[in-house]
Image (cartoon, rainbow, N blue to C red; front, side):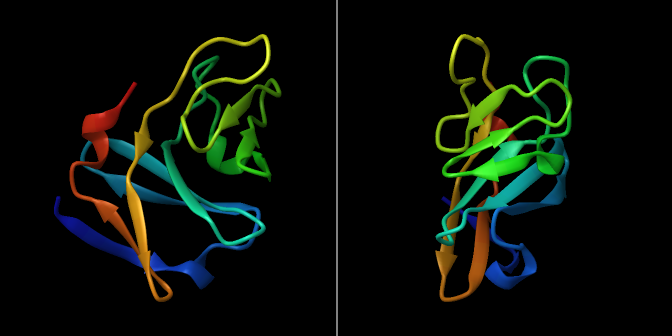
Length: 108
């Protein structure tokens, strides 16, 4: 797999997100309170809300529009809600974050 450097861990606040533009859409890169990073396509499977503007808690994000909770690990809606959003592979080397170049190919 080929990787592209997208920034530093310190570019993303703990329990926050930043977006990366790709040829196939916006990818939200999330940082948890314990410095894990995850990436999802930046749209809730419910009504397309911007997940990057949601609240990160544990390894989940709550959509700011209608409070759907999405797993950062799987992209799947949690609880009674159904649906999923595509995930994107990331890796961290030191403080640098790298995204798989086939980022949009894993869309749900």
